[in-house]
Length: 113
Length: 113
Image (tube, rainbow over the protein chains, first blue to last red):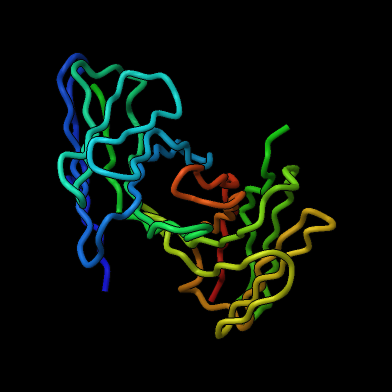
């Protein structure tokens, strides 16, 4: 069966520091991968998605970037964190194909001080 | 107007009650409809996945889609305290690999023992 791992679960970082969040998927090949941010009491906002190695699409302009160095690895990064980057970050995957549902990891709660 | 509207709740019901959760949407191109359950500090977990209009049942859960009214519902029978969570509806036009799911903001459900 397929599993998705996301770490760390919680992270506290100072303003201006760099960020690297990692997500890996097991049990499938060539998944579509996604990074979302979820604000309290609000829905999920898609940040990036990827349909293959090195292929990244950005949904919203921001202080973050994403990379996919391997088929089942997705990384969310920032060079200098802002206070507004605080939030709950979720990685998800879906099989390729029309209308496939997405499956989420357990998220990283990021606090910027 | 948001593409997907969902009452944030909280919705409080006694154990054993039938729960009805709903979403309305404005985009007539949505074809795939999903319900996710999210416990506090966890990622969303896929509960139900349907295509186009109709009903789908899985144990205590029933999903209904009425595309003519742009309205979807999730029914939970014999609700349990363990059902207490936030329920998110999500929908897609088609290939979720290239177009993200559009989420409602979630309804918080509390089942009182």
